[in-house]
Length: 328
Ligand code: AQP
Image 1 (cartoon, rainbow, N blue to C red):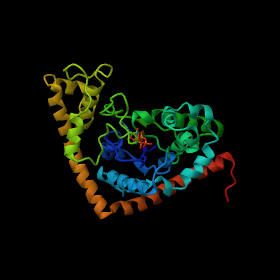
Image 2 (cartoon, rainbow, N blue to C red):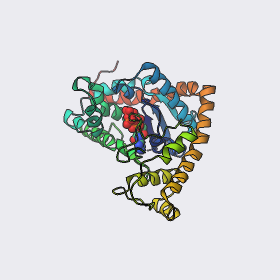
Image 3 (cartoon, rainbow, N blue to C red):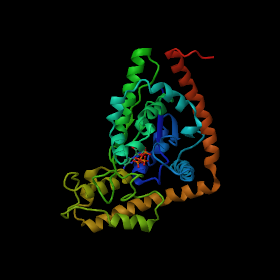
Image 4 (cartoon, rainbow, N blue to C red):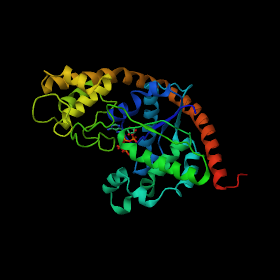
């Protein structure tokens, strides 16, 4: 079977360097490998409270960022999750094939729900992995590029596919997660033990940050005692995170970078990391601004939604037929 690639980002906040390294940096290469479906997960963004105007603006930003990363809307489908109703329809079906026990074991749910009062935990937050599995299944995706934090959800989607196919025959395609070798989890600059994430902006590098801001953040990044630039996540999580960022952006191995920086002090090393980030993001930011101004994302989203709807509706029908829904 041809390669089908699916990847998405939630428009919940300003995109971070973590999102860039996980999805955007290699987007051009990834989508060249087969048919690709790249989406803005706006329904997922509703799982925590979000202001409507901010959601709209974030969605536009994200579309522009995907295009700035090299997505060609003629070749790949770029779309809003909400513009393909089959996501919600398949979700209504698939929620019967994943169970409360397994959903309650999801780390991301526990982390996010742990920050909320019990009466403020929405059903959508709990059932998030069901919809995510549907996002993948609808496009028969066999390759799903993600950061490491999403591996547990992909595993659940794989369980669902197994369970469903065992019962109804080979209806669904088995997805496989793909994580970057270097950079599968970029950590916060202020707390290198926590993931860099949009919802916890302290310690983030945002893709829209000005060069001076990026440099300031990296120079102020929490580092560790000692002076040697060495990868040691246990004892040197701050330096290890900066090394990871550097290597992910430069496409080199950790040991190559360790050799390069063998005689560096922390301050000089941080300057090199800051240069690498700024040099990577400046042209990317310029393309993003051009796209925002020419509004080419509008047409791209329209064309993409059409392509995505066509494929998603086929899969939905296949599922409906398999489970015994009478299609009129
Ligand atoms: N720090 C990270 N390191 C590596 N990969 C990351 N990803 C996110 N953060 C890192 C990957 O980026 C893709 C899109 O992420 P997302 O939109 O699903 O969620 P998020 O950026 O991780 O956002 P938050 O802040 O945790 O939650 P929200 O957005 O709900 O506030 C995924 O492939 C993810 O793995």
